[in-house]
Length: 424
Image (cartoon, rainbow, N blue to C red; front, side, top):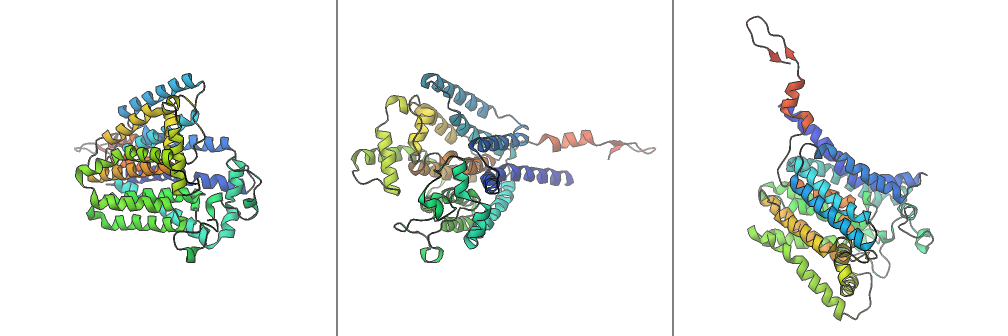
């Protein structure tokens, strides 16, 4: 029992280190930038590399042949794209490395109970900083000058009217003409971002937390209520319309999709792409920063695609709110289809795994409609792919704390006369 407790404690620490780092690293870099240590885009890349290196203790116990084969195929395909395109796209490699690495790590842990403990702690910290930002915004922005951080890393222009009014991200305040959707009278126009620095990312994280809670069995109703309740609070604070819509879809799926029906979201991208193309071809309204505007923009980009763009051999940038266009231009239709098929063909051990895959499929299909690369952002992608690996319930024993290695390291106590030797 003692050995098991030591093993579980060490595993939980590793999970908190790896998954916690993906959630909090941007906030840590922002604080460094605020207190006089300039942060560049190169530092962000280095931080993400170190987080991936931190996954090694969870990867080493077992090599997953399927992951290695998929990684080799994806790498070869991206190299072929580089030859035809005339340049190597490192971000495409990075975007695929994150899900492969974190799925591999989660698969080797394979303990939903450990994931529950880690996720509760992470959600608790996220909620703490969310209310800290809500109730003490001036103090929060003196620690996390988000606008300055994004200017320093090249994500925003340095001189704008917005800079003089707020230290939050551009979307941290709802414009007067649009206004807040959720509890406008109570929370005004401020959209909370917590440790994610952007309310959009906080909403995406809340959707993932809700998906984790809804995937649980009826016997775990208490855990479901905890995770879904926390997600609802975060959605309201972030005023995330996408998260509100997504969680509504997930709630419908939880009650309507049973058994084989959990595989129906496999077809969602087909219907969504048909809708986007139709909007792009026939919609003649004014493009705006709202749902219909983003859908129309995404559809228009797809309509204008040529064969080279569709196969990933042409232009691969400039799709900020157009996830499907971004994915096709980065990876190509062939690789996207292979990855989507593999995602649905992974054997699921139980209903919880099938439900969680269903909900993540819904989340991915929807977010690609209105956001460019959010699906691949480490601060949320690391969490979702780690949890997906976890629900496969296929753990690998960590070598440092395995029973055999412990026995090898324990000294043998010399036997007393007439008795057998024992290990200390």
